[in-house]
Image 1 (cartoon, rainbow, N blue to C red):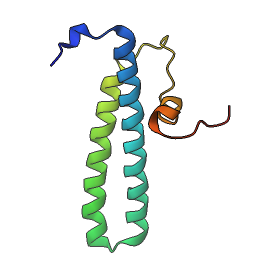
Image 2 (image 1 turned 180 degrees about the vertical axis):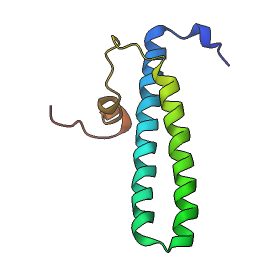
Image 3 (image 1 turned 180 degrees about the horizontal axis):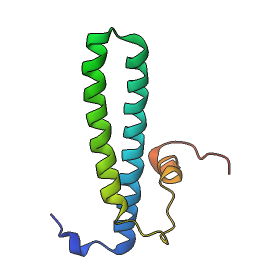
Amino acid sequence: MKNKDTMTNPDFQKLIALVLNDLAIRRTMLENREQEVSQQMSSLEKDAELEQLDDQIQQVQADFDHYREFQDPQFNFNATKYLQGPSMGLPRRPQ
């Protein structure tokens, strides 16, 4: 295992961008599930699941806020473009 000190700053910033992108996606998925639960379940089931989903959203948001503190605003990296490029086996989106 490599030591984190051997990571270059651009590699670190890329890692941070990917983590933030992943956490944002997770938060969106949890929020979408929260809306589904609100609309579909009975009150006892709904309350329990909504509480659990809210806890998960808060945990993801706390991680997002923590890692965002490490992000260099001058670092130019588009995680969405990176994840949708041919390196992931997906066709490039038109520019």
